[in-house]
Length: 251
Image (cartoon, rainbow, N blue to C red; front, side, top):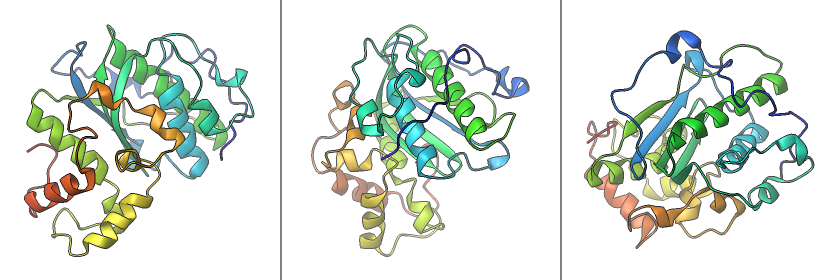
């Protein structure tokens, strides 16, 4: 288990100082709205890795939980807690509901539902600023870590939401089969064994594994197919339907 070290998150949660200011001025073509679903993502600047070891992954997972809180929370006030202990701390109102997530070596994906006004923006501001402060201090570096402001897509149809739910959980496949998007997966067992053992996504939670990270997501705020029925079979059907050359960001 990871025990959080004393990297304070004070003073930086209201700052974008670690985000590339030139790219941050870019505007999206939609506004975030309460009750709507979104795919949020970002990757390392110059496609660099943003997770170098287990501690980095677990810090980001911890932040997904603790900064999703309308009250101020300082990790430095809770030293020597394990990740699982952080993920059981009480919270007040949350900014967003998280339905799925996946951490990859140089990027991340989140599926969220906004709960309060400006909830998505406030949550992502706290999440990314706190993580970059931790990462830069831990790895003795300075400057921007991410490729500008986070990216977001409005999942405004049921079909699009279903697609991203499956695609988010299938992202780790590229780590064991880099060409899976261009060539049909031939070894289903190897693929699903790899996904079942990948710790840094919500795949295990939807497979019924009981673990501390399950507290990050709120399936009840999402449509019935988030956790209803045979999850692994639905992912397999998605793979069979999306033949080579058709796996893109949007159907």
